[in-house]
Structures are given as structure tokens and as C-alpha cells.
Amino acid sequence: DTEVTQTPKHLVMGMTNKKSLKCEQHMGHRAMYWYKQKAKKPPELMFVYSYEKLSINESVPSRFSPECPNSSLLNLHLHALQPEDSALYLCASSQEAWTVWGYEQYFGPGTRLTVT
Amino acid sequence: EDKVVQSPLSLVVHEGDTVTLNCSYEVTNFRSLLWYKQEKKAPTFLFMLTSSGIEKKSGRLSSILDKKELFSILNITATQTGDSAIYLCAVVIQGKSTFGDGTTLTVKP
Image 1 (cartoon, chains in turn orange, yellow):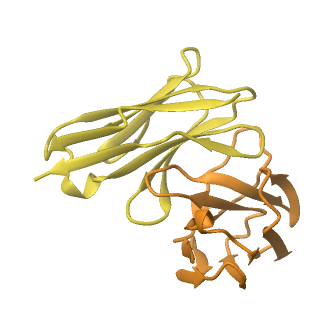
Image 2 (tube, chains in turn purple, green; image 1 turned 180 degrees about the horizontal axis):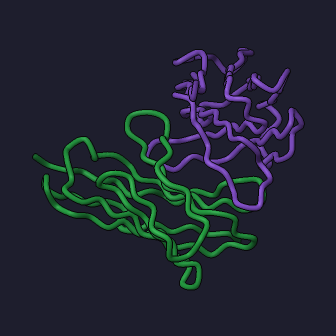
Image 3 (cartoon, each protein chain N blue to C red; image 1 turned 135 degrees about the horizontal axis):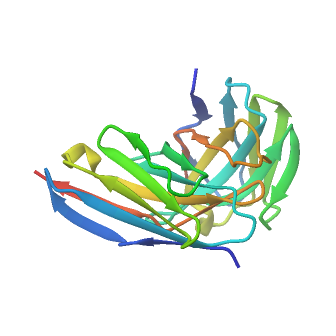
């Protein structure tokens, strides 16, 4: 199984709502990532989890709160978002995050988020 | 600051043409360079390159890395309409990938 799944596929939320994005992989990968992708732009890294610990936070505003309950699951909790946060949120996983040779990432299909 | 630059930004060709996409980088602590293809949704992995001068091939796609000149190329021969996509280059540094802006390839019938 080389699949990364994400739910929901689409999400529309108001600026006062609280919602969560979910990501799951069953490849035994020990690194998981959240990316944000705006239209016609490359993915921008938000967070990296390695062995269930947050290892990189790319200065993401606190209205985005990641959580890694176990090695297969990654959540992104959203609260008080702004319209400019509307984007495609991609989850990815890789075997490891810190290796001599680098790693390939497997991406989920993404959650299309619209903040109204 | 780490930088990954892809060229051209967009390209329109006809079926059967051969294309070469470029990725140059200026980073510290280089680990590897990866190519991804992105259609409507998530990027899908194509190649990972860690050693200079060794070509990776998969069907009509091939890629090579030059660590001395700090660039990689992705070649697609006998292009098909299904090759239309955004091709992303990413450089892995310590624990994270930095992506280029991508090359949008359109293959016309």
C-alpha cells in the first residue's frame, strides 16, 4: 500500500470556525509533512514530523496547529483562519526525514480549503 | 538562502516532440534532487538523484544530475498528451525539501 489518504477532500469554513484536516499512511514511514499550495505555485513546507515529534515548523502562524497522534496519523487543526489561508493542503510521508541520501515523498491528494 | 530555479516556466509542444526541463540549485548541505509530476492534484514521484553523472530512466523519461555545475535535467522523449502537467524539482537539504516553481508542460495533439 503506497497510498497517503487525506480527509476531507474539500472544506469550506468561516473565519471563526475550528476544523481539522486528517492524513493517514500505512507504509511504515517515520516522517510526515504538511504543505500548503496556492494556485500556480509549488508546495510550501509548513511542518515536519519525524518519529512523531515535531522537527520543523517553518514559522507557521499559530492558527495552524499540527498533531501527530501516532506514526500513521497526522492532523492539522485550524482555528480563526483568514481568507488568504485558502489553498490546497497537502500531506506527505517519507521513510525517514534525516538521511544522508535524502528521501522521496509520497503525497496525499490534498484538502482544498476555502475560508470565507 | 537556499534557491531552486526551474526553466522554462512553461512550454508548449506537439505530440512526438522531445523536451528538456532544467533545474538549477544553490543550497547548503545538499542531499538529493527529486523530480515530481503534478497533474490535477498531488505531486507524484518520478526520480531521485544523489550521484553526479548517473542517468535514471523510466520509459520515455530520463534525468541526470551534475553536482559540479549544480543542475539537473529531465528529458521526455516522444511526448504524449498525457505528459501535460507541472513538473516540479525539489532539493532535499537537512530534513526538508525546497521546491522550484515548476515547469508547466502542455503537449498538443
